[in-house]
Amino acid sequence: MPAPTVPLAAYEVVRLADGTILAIGFAIAAIITYVAFRFANPLWGAAGIVALCHDVFVALGLLSITQIEVDLVVMGAILTIAGYSINDTIVIFDRMRERLGSIQEVANALADNLPAPKASSGRSRRRRRKRKKKGAGQGQAQAKAQDNGAKPEAQAKPEPETAPAAEA
Figure: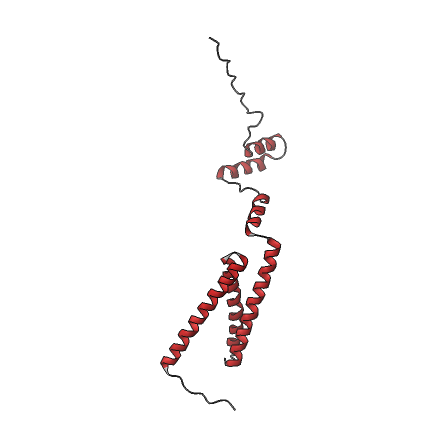
């Protein structure tokens, strides 16, 4: 037999909603602060909150699709999902930190191993098209030398020789 329900006054509903929003805000701030201090990066805290919200919204979406009534037992299940989600996120972040080291080490490793960005202009695209049209052989070598910024041998101009300074 279901328990009798007592209607709440409008001011009590508003008071409960305000308290709930305040509690959720404090919880989010506490999670971000904890993860930021533990992993030395506040972005990881924000990512943990995004993962937490995703898990809770998926569960709420399934409840909505199946039209299950939300009572205290369901709210307990939602809070349990939230707890397991943030715990899982922190464990995963801990493993990431172990494997990656500090963020600076990762940035330095990426900078050392990635090629420098190559600026491309319309001129270099035209050169590549010309090189493809010329085909293999001498023309291709000259086009490649031009792309690298060197002058081809056939067009290279000799450097003017400087005359030795006249001795007075």
